[in-house]
Every structure is written in C-alpha cells, then in structure tokens.
Amino acid sequence: MIMKVLLVEDEAGLVLTLTDRLQAEGFEVSSATDGARGFELALSENFDLIILDVMLPKKNGYDICRDLRQKSINTPILMLTAKGETIDKVLGLKLGADDYLTKPFEVIELLARIEALLRRSPVQNQNNSAETFRFGEVAVDFKRAEVVRNNEVVELSAMEFKLLQFLIENRGNVHSRDKLLDEVWGYDAMPSTRTVDVHVAWLRQKLEENPKHPQFIHTVHGFGYKFTV
Ligand code: CA
Image 1 (cartoon, rainbow, N blue to C red):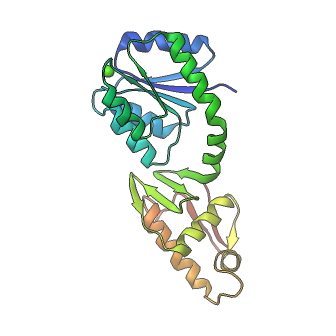
Image 2 (spheres, protein in one colour):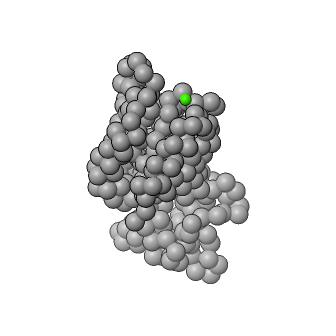
Image 3 (cartoon, rainbow, N blue to C red):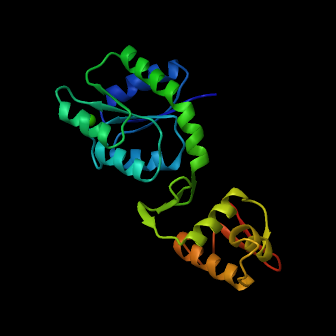
C-alpha cells in the first residue's frame, strides 16, 4: 500500500528536497505552500501523514492542527518548528500534533520520525475509520456521538443521531419507514411512520447544503429512504 503524505511548507527549496526524498522512499507526496491550501487539501483527501510547518502564510500550523483535530481528522501530524521555538513545540503537541522536528534537520531524522509515526498509526487509523464517518462538510464521530459541520458542532437529538448512524452504517440500501422505526425507535415504540419523515427532514435541515435537494439522505418514492455518498 502506498502511503500518502501531505507536506505543508512555504520554503520552496525544502518542499523540493523533501518531496524528492519522500518520493524516493516510496511515498506519494502532495504539497501546499500556504496554510489555507494545506488545510483544504487535508480536508479533501485522506492522508497517512501530514508534515506541517508552523510559520505559514494565510493560516499557521497551529491553527491548521487545531482545526483538523476539531473536525475529527486524526491523521498523524509531524510539526516543523524553527530553532529555539521550544514553547511552540509544547503548544503544537497540545493542539494535537503527534511529534515535532526542529529546523534545520537531517532528512534521515525526518524519515525516522515518519517511520515511527506510521508504525504507531495503523491501530489508530482502524479505530478512526470505524469511529468517524465523513460526508460533504460533515464529520460524524460515533464514539462521542458528535456531529461537526463546517467546523461547528451540530446539535442532534438522540433519535436523530441514531437514525443518522443507522443510515450511514447501512448506506446504499433502501430502508422502508417501518424498517427504520423498528431499527431506530425499536419494536416497543409506537410512533407513526410520519415520525420517520419528520426526523429525516430535520437531519436534512441540519446536514444537507440544500435540504430540498438532498445530496446524501435520499427519498426513494414509494419505499423509503437511503443514504449515499
Ligand atoms: Ca515557514
């Protein structure tokens, strides 16, 4: 399996050197030379590792790190700090970075850190994939029962969350209203199928960009609902 690395660094020379070396080691490398673009890339693709400089134009490394963790993106982050920024290292780790390296560094040292982080991460990654599900601008953290959209926590009722979780876990399949009532509300509950429609409407309102033309939670006329990405 090819490991994908995102490199966010504004020193062109360093980007070139590191990209060459990482590619030579068999990594697939994407890079960004400003923080805003780096953040965007980190959100749009699944990387195995992010190498993140602290001082960056547009959005600094700390903010990127914090915002990624807030969006439940748990990709290992290796921060690059300038010499003497000891306080910054602590801050970086506090904001969710996994390791840091002080510039200037030997590439061999960087490779050793990367190897250590990737060795640590498979277990984490497995957990993450089971615990967090992303679609569009939304990240669903099943373990914490938390939904984040565009950086903001979305308030869902317990039933809305259960319904969303069921739809996601059984995505691609069409579910009748009765089936959803049984699966989500339980056999003993006596709500009407209208309840399902109302909850679906609320979910769309909270999670879809255009609730009238849902991209994810679809109505299958005459049958029920299905979730697709
Ligand atoms: Ca820099």
